[in-house]
Image (cartoon, rainbow, N blue to C red):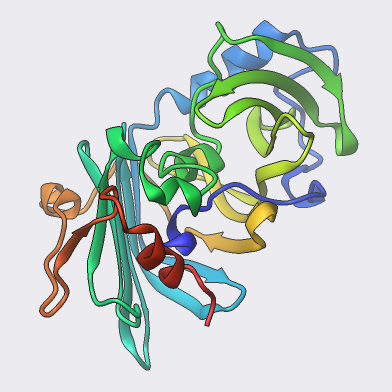
Length: 281
């Protein structure tokens, strides 16, 4: 479960996302210019898919490979496995709920939770952020101009830094967003709690420009949730923007696996079962 949802990383900005091409943003870019440039790309990304994504996390089954797809606002699916062992995980979300299945789970079940019950569920004790964190980690969410942003400030490697105060269900948070002025894309994000601790972060190591749409998305990134000791790398491979596989509705349907009943993790008493799923083996 943690492999699927703890999404945001890093500590140092990687130089790989800065290239010696003419910047689309000047060093003296205003907040309005940054928001407009980033959103010009991000608002056009309605979906993406790849036939061969790779996820790897320390202490969790090594590298998992498989198809991954996303469609706004909440639809997501990753079905990962290995050539030797076959399917290992199924992580998904539709407009109503999200789910996760692990073949080696101590409790044989397809665990699920309604989006509107996540904050009050025992799952909140295990995950510092919800399923929407993956999309935010990829840097394809638009920057909301109405939020209390501060900056821009100069940052390492020529990046432009924005600081945003956010009121969340877990209390006040501060988000730092680093924008690559060469491409006008979000290159790194860090979320701090009220005590100044990094809750989650995401650092892009490589972008991909979709040749058909001309839009860009993170291809390789590193994700971290330091408070729970989690670190993950994600490679989307030859990701395609605004193109989904045939019969996409089947992607957003919670699956059934033989001998794995559906279990609602928002029900009281499910916290122990969830803790067992997230213990690295």
